[in-house]
Length: 495
Image 1 (cartoon, rainbow, N blue to C red):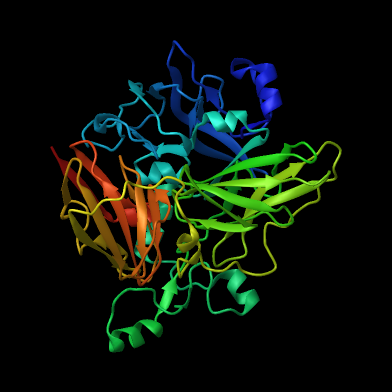
Image 2 (cartoon, helix red, strand yellow):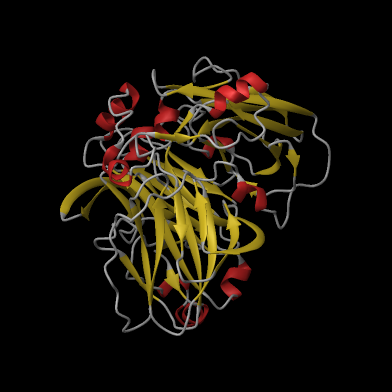
């Protein structure tokens, strides 16, 4: 976890900063590339030793931070005993450096070293394996590229990296999800609350949002149930810790904190709740938005939030990540010197709601700098489908390998209209591009710039994108079990 103020930064200098919390960051050097290793590490989770994967910098700590103007110059070593490949999520590298198996580069063999070098996009981003079971094993870490104005601001910066974790092997977890063995189990939290949804269960769908069905279909959809989480993980982590032993971050009284939240979970959406701390949402997916005041904002898998928090005189303040549709929670504690830190139960008294099922949060977001105003060459409709049993998730009715690529020419303005016809939400991530949300439920807007958009069940939303480098770019759901069963296609850009 990055944790420093402007005064501390100026006094110490980037090369000599030392941090006491996780995840930590290796600063890019002006001459030599950063040495980054995909390897194994051991965590203490609930008093049990847990072997997980990680992306480790030269100081033995996960993650990378770059200063304004620095290039992304990294030598990646595969220190695992299996092949791997790393995707730089939120970045726009040359396609050959994007990090997808055999598209176009092969995965790194054990012991292999591969060099990367490109001009990075500023903001809160992350990096992760593009092999689903490895991401489920936490082969992921923050990738922060600071802006000059962030260095100039007199505020502390803190990263909260979220993940879901199971002590069971990822292959076993994935096999159980795909087989449907746990689907329909209402779970302890649901039984205790008496509500009609839970970790494996479902909840009644709200009024549909622009899916475009006729009257009879709409009546049928209203009677259907939305599927939420399809697996109960053993733990939900913030900076590799649970609330039994949370990451406690020293902060200054009367100060400001820029909290960079990254949802690196494999299959969990969260609400971020700052409690008594007044906050402002100032960026999503690393891209600035017109600030929105509030103390609860949500994010799905692959998405990021930047929250600016105002600290009172002194005290300890939890910032919690609430699992959607369930009682589980995790988080970090911001504490001034000498403040008493109370224990927080990892189970809330009530279940958190489903995440943004009407896209109300997304509808409020406005980009500070959006795409240039020009017409799209053509609209492209993309149908998102699938079901829990059999557990198969599709794009335009096809799974990966039988997929129908989306085509464009470099420089074209293209609008992609996502129609989610399934009963689960899908965080759709486009590689190699930033796009703007321009329509939700039939209403045009100048929405946020993003790289990952959450499409709730039975909802339609449109993004505008200027096609970039002529290459084959991945477009997929960032829910790892959905991706692993084929929910991926290509955005093929021609010269």
